[in-house]
Image 1: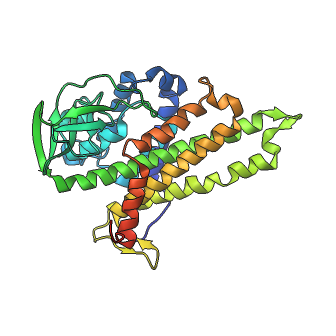
Image 2: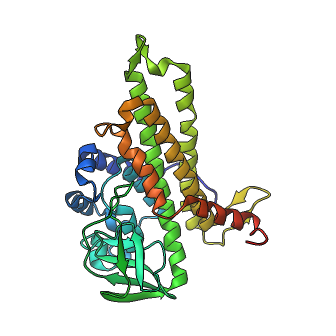
Image 3: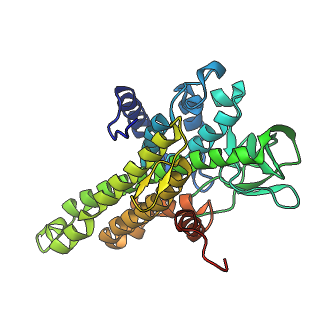
Length: 342
């Protein structure tokens, strides 16, 4: 089965539906009003009406049965709007905990990206401040724990509702072994990567629009060659990241074991591609927002200009998984082998 970059007719419908939805319901004013917690309950309820929280759940459990490739399309639209709802975390968790209230979105689910500490606490769960249930690793088990959401979060770069959550306090359910969590994390990386593509794409569009509007010396600053050069290479980062996300999603659906061939530069291993996508799109979103903010001049730092909203989330959304350098080193070890002495 070959890898096709084109969207299916169903995926085009998903894109059009959610681009329209987020454009209408999750504009910059909504994003600002949701800060610093980063959660808009009304927007979440409207998203639930569309069936988005359960899109990735199998139809037998009442979900939409969407493939990961379909969800990548959803995630990019979500990222372009930097919508203040925990949609991507929930979509991942729901696939491993398809309880009716989770599938519908009545109960918000979150994913703990790291195992518990010695006290049984998950630290900095991305949607932990608003989640009714959290899935993650505790010891050698993959568990789901229902408990009261704290509703408060420390201020953070990405305006995310992050919080520490306990795996030992609340209604605890064992879902499987700890090893089963690896696929959940790969799905999370893939969808978060697609959201970062959305951020990069929107930042590029904002930058182009601004330099065509802003004039200096009687002409738009976009007519200056140095400005043109500064924006010209960004589409490569956006499209390259988009391709990696879709290839990772494609690889997730392969019925055969994926392979890694460094010499031929051929990779179909889902976990490897998810890691590649996460690294690449994180860098791309940071570069695109940095360049766009730079060309906004001093206005780029002003609270009333939207580019600063994207600039902060481009960094915060990737940092929630830890220092990107750790991901880069792990990827290098998988490709080339661990260096002696490490």
